[in-house]
Image (cartoon, rainbow, N blue to C red):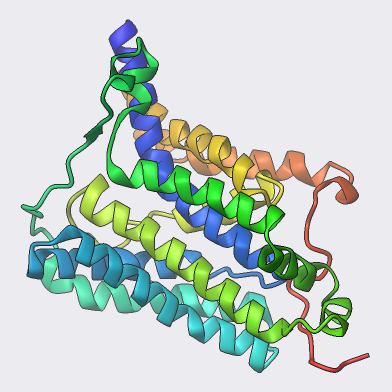
Length: 306
């Protein structure tokens, strides 16, 4: 029984890693006032590019870097539409998702069914991995797990304790006031969208070269949408996103544990998304003033406007 619990929690950490990466990026993006519904599409692009580059070069970290670069470049589309053209951010984000899913499917078609021979092994942390229970759960994970937690903590510190982070938050709260203080609102919003895109693509890279070590069309399986919901669930705080992401990672794992009980596999596959809807429903019942949402989220801003 003990081994089953440890294995379940270990897998929950693995399943929650891409959610944490994507959620952290979306938090940074939304804190600047830009709503990006294109996370799913950017994740798909990151996954396919990471897989292709890794398979071609034999170097997984080159695949990771290529994925991050692709995600940032791909996100320029949303940044240009939202910041420069001041288009509807919901429409722009949805378009980015559809474009990313379609383009990744086209690029990855020749690679469907081809296993990745290069493996990113787990990092066993000396001494810490010997701690009962926690050692096997937290300190025998793959590099993406440690990278996700590190980036989430750094992002929290960046947003809450650095000058640039405070400026990003101010562009999401009151861009007019930020502009009067000499802040280039458009530049910071562009930067935030690109950072968010890089994080989302990194989440996709984890799926294709570490989690499943293969490419199939639609492998993101709605995780980008869950990351957007987790951004609200975490109250736009990268630190809170850590436990929220791994909690939902547990929902992905539980469905496999319940299959032997004779429960419909189709129903079990719905569990993470049912949980997402329930969480959003509960959040909607809270006082909006306590949600910590950026005041100007999804609102376009024209420089010099009074």
